[in-house]
Length: 206
Figure 1 (cartoon, one colour):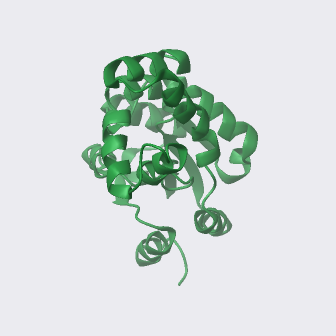
Figure 2 (cartoon, one colour; figure 1 turned 180 degrees about the horizontal axis):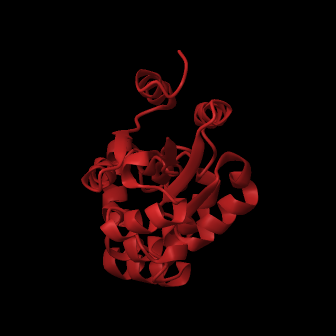
Figure 3 (tube, helix red, strand yellow; figure 1 turned 90 degrees about the horizontal axis):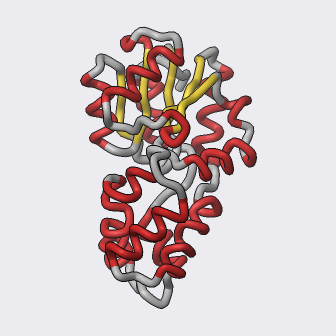
């Protein structure tokens, strides 16, 4: 079995509501306010941020567009975009899970919606080559989940038939898109529950 990991919210910390609350304490006082601001800022990873994720616009342009669209000061929007790399910290329990899966003999890959500057940061900061056989970043391949195109590209890149792939992602729409291509897939909520799911599939020992 080839196991494919999403990155944000699975391997690396990504919780937009609390992230914006930390970056904008003057603007956001509660997680509820943070969640509302995140839905406007990131547009559920469509719109401006989706183009950035897909590598079709750069950081300066996404800042300009979000500021123009929302009326938030350009400097504040830029502060958020600059702060993302520090937010993307490895989740220790997921790193242990990755190492245990590798030790069990599984081949691991990644499939991540990630703008190119952040992909470069993760590649330079973390031992992705030790953790994963290979992977695709949306910003580098100009395709994005949940479009069928990036899953088809991943099948070719990973050298696998769809039924040989198990995808772990924290967004239901991405899980559904994988299932629609006959991948195996389940929704990630935390590393402990993911471990239980992998044990139940007999991919890890209890």
